[in-house]
Amino acid sequence: NAGTDANVSVVVFGNKGMSGPRPLPAGKEAFERGSVDYFVIETDNDLGELERLQIGHDDKGWFAGWHLSHVEVTSMTTNQTWLFPCQKWMDKKKEDKMIQRMLTNAGTDSNVSVKLFGENGQEGPAKQLIAKRGQLERGNNDNFTINTVGWGAAWMLDFVEVVAQSTQQTVFFPSKQWFDAKQVGRGTLIPMPMNMAIALGEKGDRKIERTIDAVSNKPNAGKTSYKLEVHTSDLKVEVTVLGKQPTQYFVCRQWLDKKKGDFLIERTIQASAFLPDDGQCQYKVVVTTGDHRGAGTDATVRVVIYGDKGQTALIPLISDSKNLFERAQVDEFLVQGANVGNITRLQIGHDNKGWWANWHCKQVEVTSLANKQEVKFFCDQWFDKKKGDGQIIRELTPLVGGGQQQAALQKYTVTTHTADVRGAGTDADVYITLVGTTSRVGPRFLVPPSGDPFERGQADSFTFEAGDVGAVTQIII
Image 1 (cartoon, helix red, strand yellow):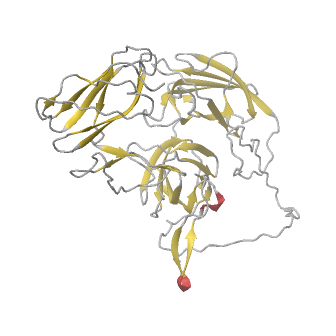
Image 2 (cartoon, rainbow, N blue to C red):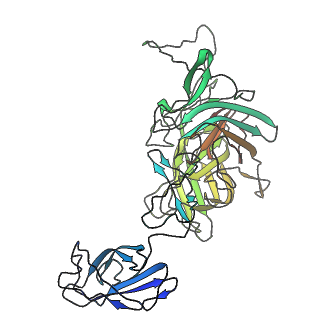
Image 3 (cartoon, rainbow, N blue to C red):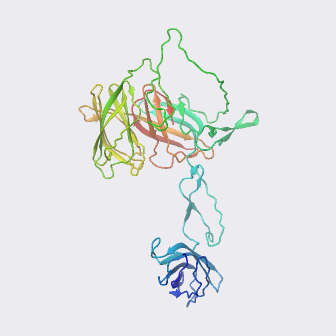
């Protein structure tokens, strides 16, 4: 039903004037579906360079609705042609119900930008095409070269540097590997002895998270790298502690499941000389959302409770009874986790999902039903990637000194060094977990105060507060 029986008219606008309304007298078969119809109109003077064309109909006739593809206008004096695309209905019952439209010339003098999308994701911010005179005109094939800064989420990490600011201890974590879940076999060629070359950090393992052991010296980017292919025999391995050697326990108490808890299927577990109490503990968690505009959240809020005997798994605060975490609302939960002894700190955050994920948390109270300890954590901060420091996960310490101040947190500065190879940068969100001799913190998202982080050859520094983990021995990034 693209054709119309209505009366069609046009007005042509140029940089030297306009034509005024001109009817397009149609024969019986004009403006039918798929037809091309020709008309000649006269103007009192030369309109110059045509810029706009107004076209529409009077909505009369048995079938008035019309779908217009485009209009071409040719000057019979200069033989120059202008194209005015439409691709819309002129119908009071369809789309925006307009029966008159203003069309613009297909060429442009405006700034044109492009954003590239590929199988690995998107390129980043839109790139402006720098057009010369005569380009981006109707019928032109114009070539432009743009410089990209990395495709999608794939990231090549060189090394990470972590500084404990109170002691100024610096620890390095060498990587030299790709973080890419989608593509296999992309690497950078590294010179090797005897004129050989290999693909360093190939993406064959498809990992986007890695556990990296600490080293005391800064990695040397100029060292030669070698690819080792290790074939392990198909044998069972048993580890036995002989004689009176002390037994080490590795207590997990967390899911290894992509659908439960914190969704990890690989964990680093610290050794313990004793087996902690196997009993679980119930905790009452009371969360107060701030009284600010937009303070409520639709995201899933989760906590980790730390104590002098360990920590719980990541516990989601969920309930089927009502809308949770609304503005100025107090929500109470009864949860279960490992008995951590005396509560020392709390990690709280959300998964940044839902229609409205941003959240302002005023305070949290945690009560251990095992030892009746009640601890209050004051927060009064946004959990929002676009506000404040951009963090959506925080660590809180209890109020001390009569409830007026909080115990101090440790400040950590993390510096990532993205490799200087093609495609090394990433647009993905990057997070880190610090594993130390006494505890661990994380995951924490690395949110820059400004700029575009994790680009090729770039060093980016991030500072956040967390509980003291002792000497940092590993990171998960």
